[in-house]
Length: 124
Image (cartoon, rainbow, N blue to C red; front, side, top):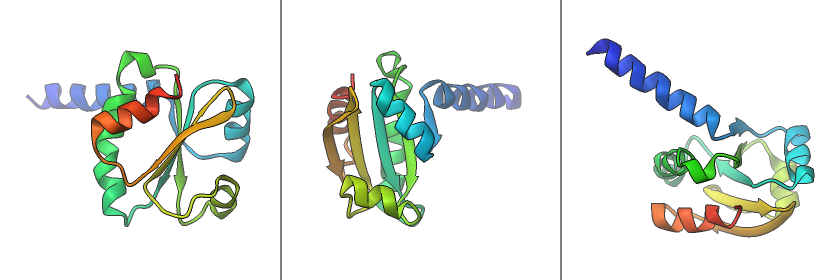
C-alpha cells in the first residue's frame, strides 16, 4: 500500500510539472508571452483561504490533456509588486490569462472548477 501511495504522489508531481506550473520569473514570463503560447498568472498568497481553495481545482485542470501546453506562473502576491502594478492586480486569488501575448481574461476569487475551466480555456 505504501508503494502505491508513493507512486500516486510521484505521478501527481509529474503531472503538475508536465502541465507547466512554475514560480513566476520575469524573464521566463516575458519569453512565454513573446512566444505567444497559452500563459496564466496565478497571484497566490499562502495566507489566503481562497487561494488555498483554488489550488486543487487548478491542479486538476492543468492535469487535463488539453491544458498540456499551458504555462502557469505562480506569482507571490506579497512579493511581486511590479507585476501586480503592470497587470493592474489589486487582490490575491486573481488569475490573468494570456493568448498570443495578449490578455484574454481574468478572474478574482473564483473557486468553482467549471468557471476556472472556462477562464483557462480562453488561453487555448
